[in-house]
Image 1 (spheres, helix red, strand yellow):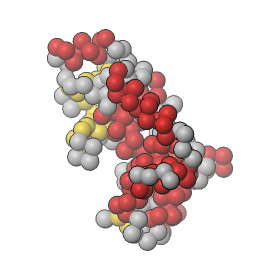
Image 2 (image 1 turned 60 degrees about the vertical axis):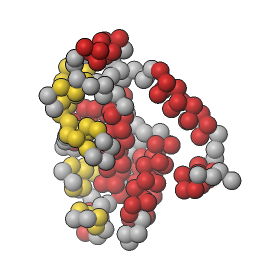
Image 3 (image 1 turned 135 degrees about the vertical axis):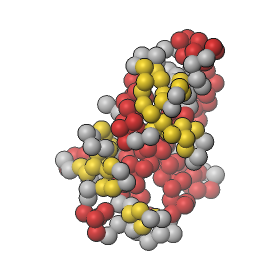
Image 4 (image 1 turned 45 degrees about the vertical axis):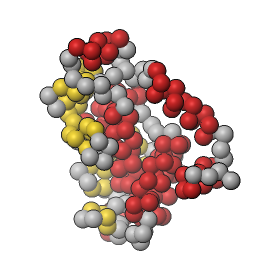
Length: 210
């Protein structure tokens, strides 16, 4: 099993991507469909890359997104371009999911294996990751995956789709983050959970709920 984003993570990341690319014809509609896929937990591990449901998992169809390509007909025929690449709803969903995992991993990297970092990892088993020689290390599994620097999140990110899945599987069974960061996250989500979907969307766009 792999970790799944919650409602607020999906809305936030969809909104961020939409702000950058909503002017491109065909992207807003595909982002709406990508949002449906993500909210339905329509992403899971595939032997070749990331499996993405066609719309919802209940219809039994899925496509593989790997190496910047998707196996769906839209990607082959009519998907709009962002930069030099074509983007169908499945590739958009996979990209948003990748960003979500990158953010989750970035919260858990505490440095290399020296001194206090190593002690902190030992003090909180299965919670933090170390960055050593281009890879992330867990005290439970050893080398978790290879990573590259990602300027968008100002931190390290999984190098390949297989590394992404390894991170997503680890996050699914990892312990909760302790301390102030987790408390602030819980407080924010508790407050946001009191909003209706319409109020949350308005808050994301304007900072206001009324």
